[in-house]
Image (cartoon, rainbow, N blue to C red; front, side, top):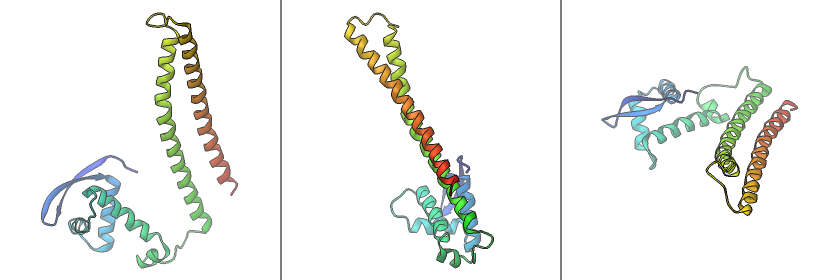
Length: 179
């Protein structure tokens, strides 16, 4: 999926404006226009007239998602004139769905892992600096014990997170490979 934003000028309800959308979103809008017999300007004007408070680009993205989502239902698929899902066995459709789920879960794990590891690495790094008395002696021996606990707990939590992400990825792979 192309994530870089692309600016294009569009006339919406008679007013020229610039929209910044992902390249894939522009491609999808073009496909919808071709299928439905609209110009990009007419389609964006129609979306604008039905906007429910979201910003314009969010409303366009939502429209594209809903358009393709409705076409993916049985009735929407037939209504769109695609006919039966020829050439796609249930196993092939299931396989694509599983691949999609694995990709989404992998992305989620990556984001969660990064969100947890970043502040945790900061805690571990600063606790090491204090523990090693980089900027001078700590003074009170109790603080030395506390910083040892903080550092050890941070390291332990980092290992738990890394092992949890690995286990989750392995369980996802094994549960889908046996089906």
